[in-house]
Length: 344
Length: 263
Image (cartoon, each protein chain N blue to C red):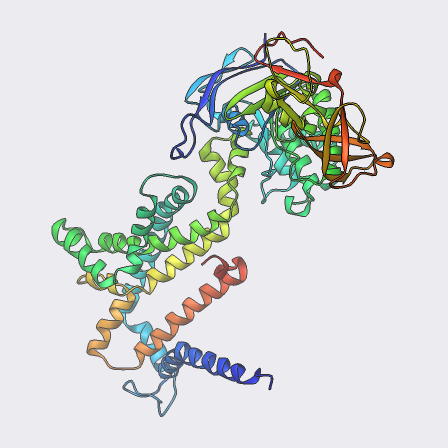
């Protein structure tokens, strides 16, 4: 039995767009088991934030049903849901100290003073900010503010924690640091979390499961490993970093494929750029870029432009040079409308 | 030639001229208020406190000052009670005709006060037989509403939307969230709106002119009436006190709340 269950959720656009038919979120169904961290992943405008706001009760769905721990909460007012929300912009109360920000939810629950102080300080300690309890949010860095927002949402021990791109305003190093911290907080608290992001690295490193969304619908709902290796649709393949995507009829090389396969995709790492004359696809270098341990090439071939790699110390070719490409058939992702396509 | 000095002189002259226009009349009134003469002349040949003292003996001034203060306080409160929710809806919600409502709310500023006063007189006093004080309150509230809506809208525009949502997800109702996280953060705007409204009402003439009646009048209207029969410097003395009162209120608010930031 799933802990959070969404069935046939539909949310209309806040402002109806001229010419745009349909909903911001359409016929979306989703199940999250207790204690897991599930990500909603997709480009901006795909409906992931809308879905999350509907779960929090900040938006009224036009259709569908939301259940939490067996209770139908579709029409429960937001303030009675006990669902925490961490905002991209932190949304700390600017007039309150960190202590009062974190204690906000507990005060509304009429907790006695001693217990309130104990739990607030405990929450601030768990994010490493107990020493800053008297400061105002404006006196903190972005990373610290986001930690306070987390503590504020976690201290009420919500039944579910929603996180809306919580790390996207932080710099790259801090983002990676905060991922680990989030994971730790999730394990320690055991709170079920739904995480919205457009960053596939973030989703892959954090999630028990990832739901890829596009245009208000779910494209694929799988574990990170399955999503990374076996994208179900061309959209997911592109989004997960398969730079080379081919329709079945336009493959760059002969393959023996099951009938259900419609597309085949390779990551750049599965395409080796070699000296011309090697067996394989022949082409001309369009551009090259340095990527540390390797060089990445765009190579124009008879089958179209392909992205490939070569070791940085053994790739003398520049723009306009002839090269050959060795595509690793074994690392192909087979995409089709049939989930019985064998794993490759 | 650097060309720096000529525009500098020009700007300085323009600024000086603007200040003379703004402060000059007050300067004249201020001096005249301390005149020792029997009639209003400038410059006075002698100075004294006698007219300053005299205004406190005029019964109609005291009565109309009370009316003015009551009307200013009550209509300010009313304009805030109506204006804050209106500003909130205009800033936070989208609905058809929003721009029209916004424009309508600024009408009392654009339409001459004489016309507003006449319209209110026609409807409330003549048709519905409303008492003078009540009609004054309604008229003043209508005149103040644009100010409270504008000032509070400005504060709300600068306040992030998401903190209300955050408060709601933490267990506050929408109304509670408004009191706990919106009001404290627009406090400066609320106080500024109140001060601006109070001063506007206190100094209001055109609307009051139509709505005051026999026996009940506001201070500015009573001063007009007094001038028609007495041409002595007590009006200048009283004007001086009113201007000083306004300056003290505004300066105090500026000092404690940064009043002019919000207006």
